[in-house]
Length: 170
Image (tube, rainbow, N blue to C red; front, side):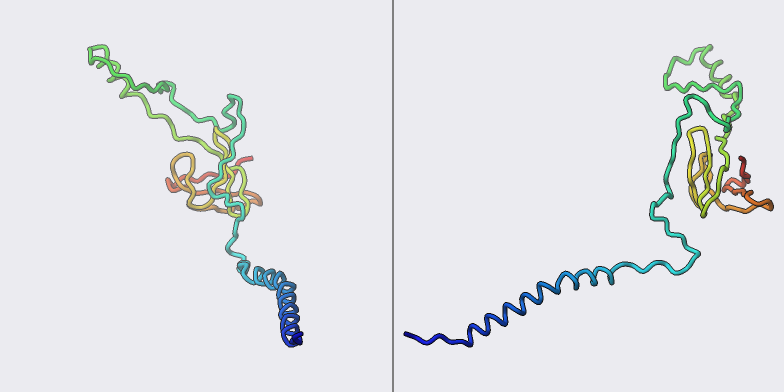
């Protein structure tokens, strides 16, 4: 019979121990590698990072037909009916066109400033509440240019790109 070589058994045992050690340490190495790869928080207090990304968020509430406290003043002579029909240009039709061209334009949408918190402005219009920040579009088609603190505690005003100044109402 042939004599067995004990060196090969020693190599297999050593390889098994090294493999077992690698398998035991690998999860800890991966965990600490993930911790190092996380981004560092911003150290300056000037920039506020919003994890919810509320820049274009619209919050709508049920009004059940009530327009709320933001009633837009529309002219009494404004024809609210929009149609896309055409007809022959008869004398009656030409007269109606002439009368329609003299009616006043509808007013700009009215919105109210409700609250200012952390650079976000809560405004209310007839469809509900909106959260906007500087540079965001407003319901009247303008953009929010500036947020200013008033002289009284808790009083704020905002400036729009149209030059309007809207103060906080409770």
